[in-house]
Length: 99
Image 1: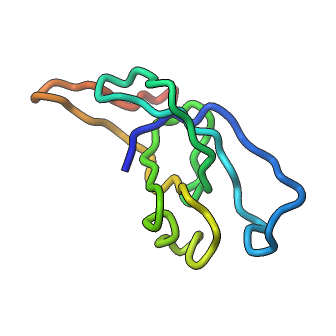
Image 2 (image 1 turned 90 degrees about the horizontal axis):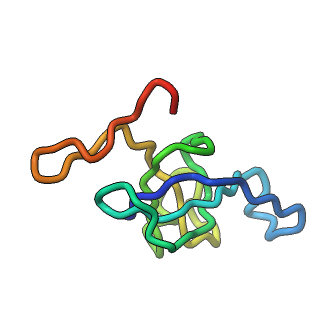
Image 3 (image 1 turned 90 degrees about the vertical axis):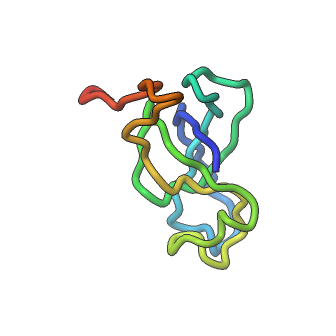
């Protein structure tokens, strides 16, 4: 799993039929301090995340193990919205009411 921030949506009107109805989000990877690393991925949104939220993204064969993505040709899925994390006992991120 990777930490990421949702930075946008991806719309594809023509796609494999099994992907109809799925929502695609553009996610930038974050390091343990919450800084963008430069990497990004288009991920199926299985949890109803929104732009600006910090999320957990599963990739590879693990991305096809949610109810939303089961047996679908996807390589990345947003499978959690992050509330907080700490590094070395200190808060590195805590979701605010504004997120």
